[in-house]
Amino acid sequence: MTDRAGAVSGAAAAAAPSQGFSPAYRNYALFILMLGYTANYVDRQILAILLEPIKQDLGVSDTQLGFLSGITFAIFYATLGVPIAMLADRTNRRNIVSAAIAIFSTMTVMCGFVTSFAQLALARIGVGIGEAGSSPPSHSMISDMFPPEKRASAMGIYSLGINIGILIGFLVGGWVSQWYGWRAAFMVVGAPGILIALLIRFTLKEPQRGHADGTTAQAAGNAPKVGEVFRLLWSQRSFRHISFACALAAFGGYAGVTWIPAFLMRSYQMSPGEIGTWLALIIGFVGGAGTYATAWAADRYSKRDVRWNMWVVAIVMIVCFPLSVAMYLSPDKYWAMFFFLVPAFAGAAYIGPSLAMTQGLVVLRMRAVASAVLFLILNLIGMGLGPQAVGLISDLYAPSFGQESLRYALLTVMIVWPWAALHFWLGASSLKEDLEKARNHGLK
Image 1 (cartoon, one colour):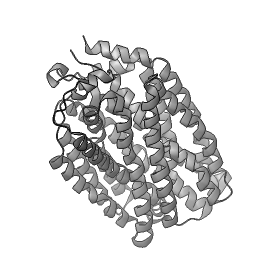
Image 2 (tube, helix red, strand yellow):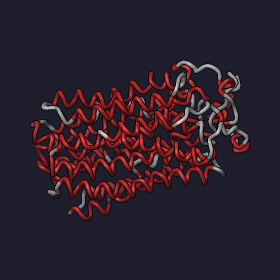
Image 3 (cartoon, one colour):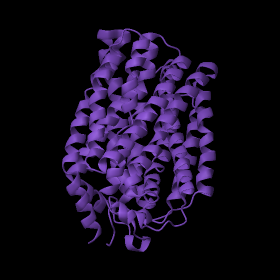
Image 4 (cartoon, helix red, strand yellow):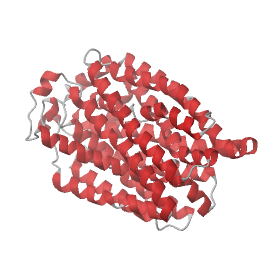
């Protein structure tokens, strides 16, 4: 194989052929892909603001709600991401992203027609299947349009879809649910994704693999098997730490974003519309600022030392921990929202730099699968177990804490923030050597 890793020099990147991608088109493509990721997160997170009304309507427990928002979704989303990413490393990534968005948007609309917990679980499985195919191919496309020195920022902008999606999901979901019911909320947020799928299919081009790295599709060779990708990644100490750190950060993030609306309803008697407005503004704007600012800082400081990609994230995780504890111990809703500003800032801050480094730790035709492997670990532990753990702990705490059991369940899982910071820091220690190993692997 005569490939190169993603982390090549700026000089090589500057010499890469443009393939007709003007700066304006490149930014447009990034924006449209970010819209697709926004639809992904709207459809994924709309369930959080609807948990309490669903609980009352369908008569389910917190453990069942945790299963619905965690394992039911994550196991299909995470495991199917790898075979779909393998296909994306061999075929047209744009078409895969478009089809995936159309599927999960349609299944979100179908959630509005269910009449039982089992039907809702099946519909959410359908959403997970669709969403499995959208992110890894998008990451690969972005890496082929943006050179290494701009890649963390590009991934950070793409990852803004998380915050914008949560903003829309909470704001629209909260008020539509309050006015028209939770079924209507699913229908309203699902439909726009079909239009985004069409925009991706008919206005974006499939980028040539490797042009941002100064190589060609022919030089990239055939796509390796998933086993080779996994062996290369797992042989790198930095990736082992980064992937586990991401999983821990996602565990805390998904646990919080899934259960905070129900916590605010139970502990502070806030209405769905009020909660949706508060969380939309905080997670959407403050969280979006955190997602971009962390990626920007990683790009800036990593020019001096590539390890800053992980050091920046570790610092953010450490600062997040005490403020998360303060939030769940707050005496009233206003203090809770005030303390939530920092955890919201940190919520998705790890994604841009982690994705950029993962793309750099493999060769060109491994990129979609590399992202899928990272997301497999991140989502099975984070998305799959985070919401489920809170639901289980809340039910266990209920005999002792009653209505406040959810507060203390959320407080219990916050220990993951400093734990994640430790692994991001440890991942930085061997990052330089592992990036070099990836470059050497590509020259074999």
